Image: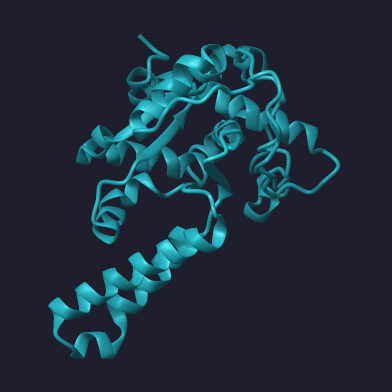
Length: 261
């Protein structure tokens, strides 16, 4: 649903919203060099930190300038929130971060539907010889223990533990698709921007990415042009027992965002 939000934001002429973006990976690489390079270790450490942060800050601003001439760049990254303090140090300000959430049963149901639809192609999650990923329950358990779902859950829980969640705006996919005007106004208020009148009946797929690069379906982020309420079909796709197990094992998430009382 993050792709839907990006596509909606791209209707606003003063915003450029990206697909999943590598800027965090660029910072990772720079941080690795800063942490391990002998030349850095040999210099004054206060100066090393100051100049490295300036290097990253200048690089991020230059990246944004090269990416778009619009005044606001909304970068989509899977690791932004868990690295909130790193971005805060680099940018010398509290960054604005928006995190889309959805009923975990619906997320896993969607992934299972995509898996079933991709039967004509080899899918790495399945290994019949080793009996791995050979049924819905095994696939759900695997997704909960691996990227992107498992890692996202782990990072999200850590953000709440560290208090980072207080700086982040969480938007439920169910709310965005049911009350899009209200939710977009929440977003603009959080960003400190003027509201914009969006056309929720005709949202262009302005953001597209090939998730096969991550070993996932290349249809994972295909959106519908009309924003309309999501239908919960997880009981039919996953089965009631598995849905109950998800609520039990991931209850902290389900309760935190109002999917479980």
